[in-house]
Length: 319
Image (tube, rainbow, N blue to C red; front, side, top):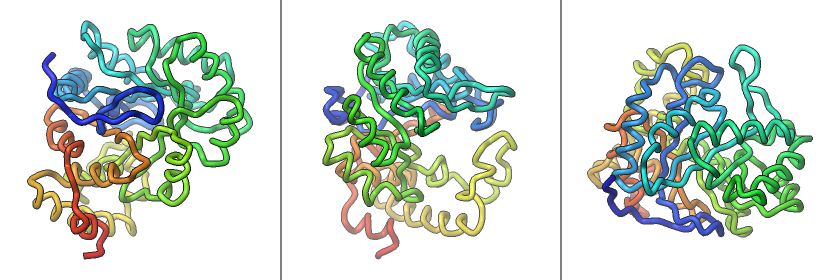
């Protein structure tokens, strides 16, 4: 498979040289569970992954919870026969419960079962990065992190990290084993991590990949009031406050500002939104979700997009 050259950066101190934009596989988990994105065609998903790799993307981030294994199965199908393959990152800690609902468990035996399933579905002997998906239940995070350290020592995972952890929780588990990576939500509509968490990660030399840099589709430029109204009932965004008033008017105004900057660079609002997250010195990479191959090209440009101070002032409503 032919690839183009995207700029890369080291993910923390892992030694992994990752492209600034990676393929996020949440949405391709499809529908039928409590955090689904509605019906998704697997052939479209595979084609989207292949196209992103052709454009030079060199890592995929998924999780066992995305469709309770379905996302990983699709990723495994896309990677079958490829060589060299991209880095594969996945997560554990949210096994399937009754009625295809998410259960929270960081128990040793549960995490080991989840990883075994992930390795099988992905078709790999080891994942390059294994992450605790959520620090829930809080009283189990030390057991969970000890388990990930064991899995790394056994060679089943190359590196270990966490997602959605606070500074206090990071400090707590750092006593057990070094935290190599952190995956927080970060976008123009979710900036809470800017003040303390990202500077902490930078000081501690923890690699950071951010998720939902386009606000789960809200900042792509394609999301309108009409489209939100037409989202299927099994799309979790239908229930999100960010997609409803009073926040919606404010967010659509932000998209208009992103479009102004996008026009300056002959790109898309979504690419500008992603590029904005990459300006933060703590951020190594941004996870971008694609459901069809035609969605890939407009966003991949974010990896090379250089925003000026004037652009940032426009985006943030200061110009």
